[in-house]
Length: 474
Image (cartoon, rainbow, N blue to C red):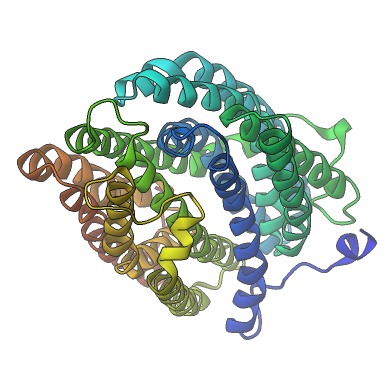
């Protein structure tokens, strides 16, 4: 613990970039993968229970849970940007005010998330097409998860503060420990107590609570400007406004992305109802899609780590008034994220059989539920993961634009290119074909178009900065 407190923050505004980006990213990749492992552990362990629809129930709740969570978690992006910018400008007082405002916001928004989630869970899941046993399992899991949202909120805001000062190792150490706790509790509640979705939801809530308490304790022992004190816990109007200015567009973007995924999930349930025999023991396409989506989450969190690096490095160098260095930040992040996407695509392509088997999905006789579930997982993995690089490029471009203070611009581009396009696709292409392939191909198409627009904005803004033209934050 002493070593964690004494670790120096990463200097992002001077010296070679590639090594520093890797130092920042690698612990962050593992940290994000651990957070993703929470949900993966839920699904893998619950697949060992006596409830065959449990994997599908957890998988189908993800778009709805993410829609509510992202409204509040998006504000942590604003905290990341503003803390990093003040650190780059060496304004310790502003750093402290922003840190305490961010933590206060995390608690307020976390409580708001509980109220919103619990009040809307059943009607939204029913609207998505869930019925009968699948609906009841999904509602049970979702409600328990939402009760623990304040812990998840505080954890994410604390992590954003550590990232802003260049410390990605501390969250890795903490989440490694709580990740082990999560898995052990999953096994206990499912294998010993004989619970199903409610057991893994309780385990995840406990792990998030432990993460929040430990991270906040470490911030209390910090020796720099990011030190947390309960006496200073209050909302600073200037810091609050700036965090919202960056965070609101990020939150809206995340929520609307999840809304498009809810529409997609509803379409997947429609395909399931067309294909699965009446009175099936479980919903095979829902289960196969849930397993493949959970595997994709590992690739996404890795590439999103580069997005976080792009936001933080860009913000610090903008605060230090070094726009030319931001070009180099963008180039290095672009290279790293491309390599990461290719590695994950290769791994999933080579080992998809044993990977989806972890979720209880194995090949069966033609026309069987096992065969339908396996086919659904394969189609999603092939369509999405083999064409994953455009998403990685989109993440870097959006991160640089957001770090430059153009959060609203980044949001508008992402919503039009990757959200609205998918909704239009579902309402047109899918309505004509009504197959899984017609749904899944919308992902790489929307990623590529959005990535091209994000990079165009990056170059436009940086060129204006280099020519000394005043910039408006949009």
